[in-house]
Length: 212
Image (cartoon, rainbow, N blue to C red):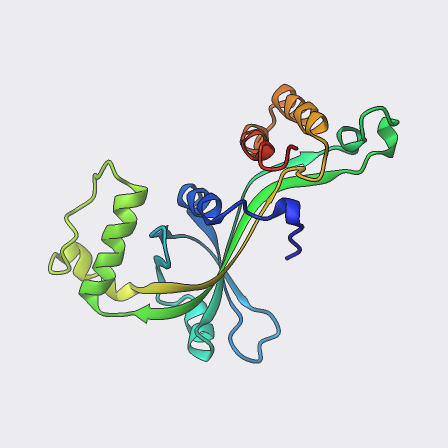
């Protein structure tokens, strides 16, 4: 992934806070000697520091790839918006000379993967995920002795990822002049297409990091 200096995370806090709000991504396991990696869309729970926890169905092909190589990539993309070429033209220049682009945020975590099969440890992962994704409750008590779970736990496996390195990118026109970025923010507000509001928030939030 190409990360220009103006697209890089301002600090670790920026990408950590963004990742805490964006908890659905793609787990990518390359394995060994495969033509293509195994890619699994999944929810996950990031602890805000160095650990990600999730669970997947036992028949998932990702387990074989992880057995071949326990190094995986978790990539998350969000807050995207298309920026038309006419918006990208520098102020005072013909609109048709502008260049279209995409605004988005992404965090890519390279991790070591540990498979969890023990029932109590798997339940602990479920408890953490449900507490995060479904804080209102409404599910049966997480007890592996209950028939509801005893019949289903063998159908899943837990996964604990230990973060080894991070690549983060916040592509929101940081290379443009302050006035131009504000003009694009106004355009995003006016268009109000899906994703525009989130992209605009990121653009405005990061504006002070690049203004002289």
